Amino acid sequence: MPVRDATPEDVEDICLLIEEHARYEGKDDLVLDRGDMAKHLFGPEPKAWVVIAEAEPDGAAGERVTAGMALCAWTFPSWDAKPGVFLDDLFVKPEFRRYGLGRELMAELGRRTGGRVEWDMQVGNAKAEAFYASLGGKPVEGWVKYRWVPDQG
Image 1 (cartoon, one colour):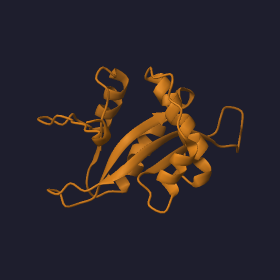
Image 2: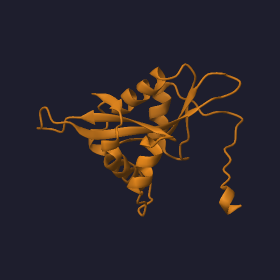
Image 3: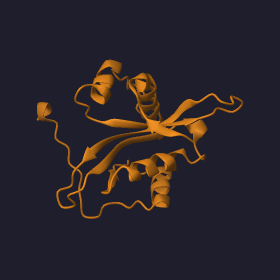
Image 4: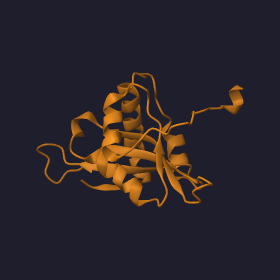
């Protein structure tokens, strides 16, 4: 189950995976701008990075398709003084689940940092909660997530 860094040639697959993930979560109208995504992931000042999981579809020996991905950004928690990874999006296509691709993606993120890997998860997503718990992931007690969008007040 190969896991590799995304390249500019993967932008379409990355956007399709994010849009499929949005539909899976009930947001049917998400359509990403491929040019913006390419700029933000592969431009002169990338803002995030992606790790791709590939798999062989049934009956397609030797052919590999993009089966999943992890979209991340670096963090630097001052009290740890070590770079960490913020996992913004982890998604494996339903037909490729239960083959260990999610674990492979998470393991790769763990190998990339001596710090921590953190993520957000929607309340009530029991499957994701069970998956993350099986990896040893735990909710962060005593912290509340805030969001501020400067242009919107």
